[in-house]
Each structure stands twice: as structure tokens, then as C-alpha cells.
Length: 405
Length: 73
Image (tube, rainbow over all chains, first blue to last red; front, top):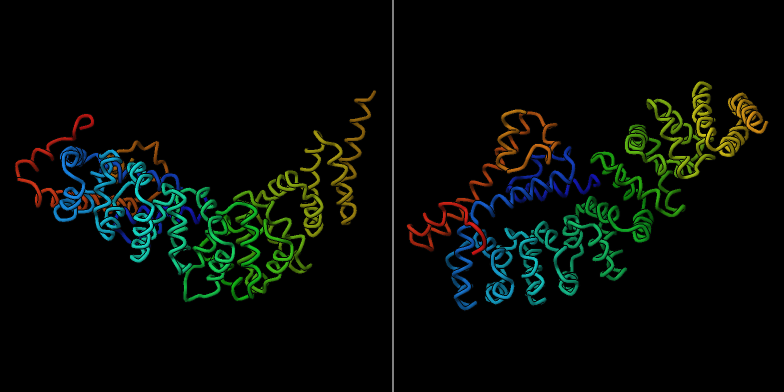
């Protein structure tokens, strides 16, 4: 999962534990899957410890009319206990009770409710009540609870909530916590495009402080929509793009952002690679190259390299050359995405020993695909370092001649 | 395996294999996480007990809290 996904999971675990995520930043080093597992363990442990009480109260609730159970819930039982009991009741009995609870109380119960245990109840609840509850949670800025439930809500309820929330900042904040990214993509498509554009443009205003949420939304939607939203962000002035670059740098989000950059239109990519911040702050480019190498993202960097000015290309070549063992991994990316011409341009800027290493790696591929080796040797010739291929090419041709004989 | 990690896994009722990355946290981080889990559980249990004691006779609360129920009611 993405680094942004990890941040969302840390926030959700801290929400369950009732602690401030800022004090548990070290948890960002853990994989999202394990953070999710810990959260699940904490919630399940609670349900198991009080299962007996929850089941017997559920038995009693079956014998009472819904309005009376609701009154007892709201006046005698706190939201944590009611959330447990809701998970023990069949939906046909839980719905009449929930329908008699006040909206603020329902919202308080949702905070503790495990939506997986109350899936049927959520599906059978009247849409209007869900929408009201969603609005109440948003009013309380409990975006995490909204995000946890979105996976389980019917489309009509999600559409109703989207319609009734006028400030797009709330949508962005809640979207950050949606559990299933497939579901997020689907929900984003329920929004009119103009509204989505408005939401993305909130990144322009630093006082809104939603840059991370905007980045997360763009990172997690599907390919086509990602390009559209990414291009929209890239159309903004340099100050906005600088903020995105700085956020990616400071929050260590390049692994999430590089695939988005690779998916943008050429026009947006050209604007991005020409940002002064890349020239003026060498540590940014260095970080990008190191992340590309560590996370196998050279296939994202090479097309961007092709759009850079000569001065930047030199810096990229210089930066990549000092990364131990990077040549083999860049070659792998070039092989998969057929970026050999671009890579030949990088290698042309490197010292002779590096060019020889490049030729050695390409020749190893050439044992399986001689045409590839000949093609790359041609690119090297065009860039002025074809000499490093002459000897291996001759050897390969001799070997082929032997096979023919 | 450190004592903190053992305690944390026992509280979460998960085997070490299901949360292998916890072993990468240092003792201080594990202690902070374990404390957060313990405090959250204690707070939650107190809220449930308080709901029960306010609404039900003491004998019933004691009986409900005795042991986990067997099977669905």
C-alpha cells in the first residue's frame, strides 16, 4: 500500500486507541496491512471481552418494542455498549431500534461500531437516516468514522451525503480514510466533474491545509481519472506545484507521487520537470532518484528525463551514477518499458567505466534477444559511446555464426 | 522476543507471525504502543462496565461479566 495509505491507517489505529497520531509517527514505518491487523485485533478483542453482556442484552432487546429498546439505549446504555449489541442483533430487529435513536446518538454509536459486524443493519437502514448521520459525523469532523463506513454504504446513501455537504474540504478529508481504494474510485465517479475539480483546487489554499488529502485522492483513483486530476493540479501556478513538491519531499511521499507524475500529460510533465525547485534544491532530485531506485520506479523517471533541459539531464545522470547498483535496475526498467533510447542518453553522460557496465548488462540481455542488443548498440552509437558495444557485438555475431555452422 | 512485544501480542491476541514488523520497533516505541493499547482497553472496559452498572442490578452485572458467552444467544 502507498505511504499515504499507511498514514491513513496510523490515524485510524490511533482513533481506535484514542491517542494523538502525532505522538505515534514511528508507526508509519510499519506496513499498512499490519496496522490494519492491529486495529482489527483491538476492535475484535473488545467485542470478545464483552460478548456475554452484549448477547444477553440483545436477547432482552428482542422481546421489547423498538421504541422502548431505543429509549433504554439512549438513557441507560452508553454508545460503546450499544455498538456491541447492534452487532449481535439481526438487522430486522436492529433497524426499528436504530430508527428511534436520535441522530447525534447514532453518530456516537457509529464511532464504536465495527461496520463489518453491522453490515446488514447498514444495508437495511433508511437512506435518509444514514445521510443525516453522515452529516452529523461530518459536522463533528469525525472523518475517520465516515471513511470506515463508506465501504458498506449503499450508493444512494453515499450520493445523498455528497449532495448535502456543501464544503468540499469535508469530502476530501473523509476520502482520505476510505478503506477500499476501488470503492473510493467508484465514489469519486458519483461526483459531478466540476465539483471534483473544485475539490482538487482546494490544494491552492494553504490555509485549508488539505494538500495531503488532495494528493491522496489523486494517488488512489484509477488511471484515467488520475491523469485528469493530476493535470488539473499541474495547471496551477508554480507556487502550488512547489507546495506539492515540498510535501512529497518532507513527508517522504515520492514513492506515491512518481507514478502519478508518469501518468500526466506531456504538457504537465514538461511544466513539472522545469520547476525551479528541482534546480535550486539538489536534495529534492537526489531524493527522487534514490526513491526511484529503492522502489523500482525508474520507469516513471525515464520519460520525465526525456523532457528535461540539458542541465537537468546532466544532474540526473550524475545523481543516478552514485547510487550503488542502480545501473542494473534502470536497465530492467528500460527493458520492460522500452525506454532504451532515453537510457542511452543518460549513459552517454556517464564516465567510460559506467558505459562499459551498461554494455555488459545489455549484452547479457542480448544472449536471449540479440536484436535488442543490436538496437541498443545503435542508440549508443548515436549518442557517441557505441565503442563500448563493438567488442561484445562482434563476439555475439561470431557465436551466431558458430550456431549456423 | 522482548517482554514488551510479548505483552503487546498477548493483548492483541495475535501470533508474532501475523505482525512481524512489530519486531522492528525499538523497546521505547513498543512500550508506548503497548501502553496506548492497555489504556484504551481499560477506558473502553470501564465505559462498558459503567453502562451495565447504571442500568442493571449488581448481581446481573457480575453474572454477565463472569465469562464469555458460549455460542449465540
